[in-house]
Length: 203
Ligand code: URA
Ligand code: SF4
Image 1 (spheres, rainbow, N blue to C red):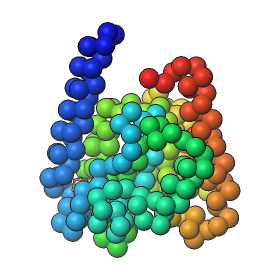
Image 2: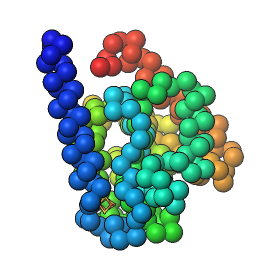
Image 3: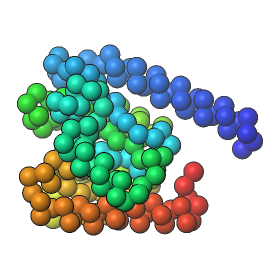
Image 4: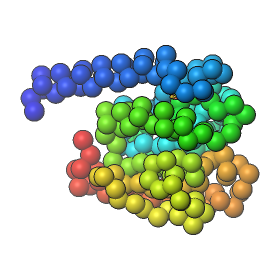
């Protein structure tokens, strides 16, 4: 592809992304729109090879309009920093983009209404690695019967993605002992990222 074509396709991708973002900003497809302060679209690099997927915004995220900015998010950021993952390598989003009241799990109909947005984000981003943070994300992304304590760290290759399920960072705030497993899983994430860049599979 020559430089002009490449710039043109980058501009097209950027426009698709912005359109999707504005569509989400006014979405009322499920009940969760009623109590939200902000729609939480995502944060990170639009060139990401890793997509971290959480469950849904909490109170801090709802207020700030960004995912994983509360205590669990700080923990996730610390681990990402310790792994020295480049800022350009990851994006963070959730199964649902509006806060479930009282931080309950999203209902199946809410997840079903919202996941098509995440799917469209994924199609535009084209990440190689999906990291499912916790049970809810894992259930909706690849297996409704997942048992996260048993299945974390078990890599799944599906539809061209490398899927890595792990604990939710909020769980680690309550269960110190899970941290070492989370770290192991994140080392796997980094290993796959490095392997792909060695093979030049990364765009
Ligand atoms: N927990 C999540 O699952 N997502 C967030 O964005 C914050 C906390
Ligand atoms: Fe729309 Fe998703 Fe918010 Fe429901 S959670 S209102 S589907 S953006």
